[in-house]
Length: 348
Image (cartoon, rainbow, N blue to C red):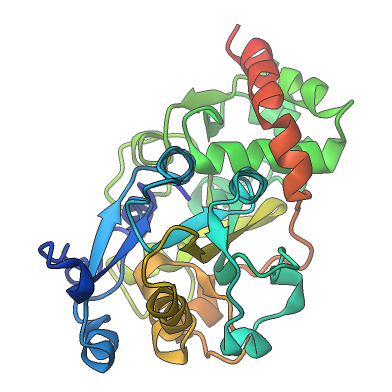
């Protein structure tokens, strides 16, 4: 997921987990993550005490860069566990053989639909949805028709009202592109984007620029466009970090049409010299205690189905009934071609 997503929540809750100072190898276990990884300070203390070990975090860029780095260093891995590979990059990682199988006992509490690898080389940790977000106020007076479907975004009445991210440089941008492929098929998504281009879609390099620079619904933002590609949980953040954390209605709302499901996984790296401890760390990330931290730490949903959500999520977050998805192998086989074609269509 996009490394700037934490800003989508307004700003981090408390302090991010600090990088532990490198220690002797037998005193340390290293967790490679994307740059968006965040858990409250002290989260790993129970694990460290139980196993007499320090957890060292190794941020490695966005999800794609992290996976590439893990592949390039597979013969001499930089970490023991990797967190943050998602279904858009899963096949690339599995085909490279960088993960060792690990069956967590906590998988009994994880829906089978999230367990995308039958060989259990990766363990689902969280679920998020990239969705269109609307500024409620912009549609209240009736001057703009409120979109309900992806096709509505090509309506001339909404010309110049949408901002999206470049899929070549942004995780939510890629997810939204994949949502349109799922919706319109491999023969129709290009025509749809051509129509969006003709209707004045704005494209930014990343989420933060789109959300805070262009979206009119962002608290503290400077934008004027009422429709943005963001997350289903972004309305929760607008309440929590807004002027009234107890508000009954968020100033923004996620649109169900066009939501794309992202599942993030943790995995034991095949070259780890302490695979049992690495497996225990994966299990810890799937423990009820850590899973309960995820919604308000990273604004994602826990993979476990038996973990209660915070009230703000229950009240303000969208849970898409039928989010778009594509087979990870299909994504991997076509991702680069789709991005090149998108670039030719939208940015020419």
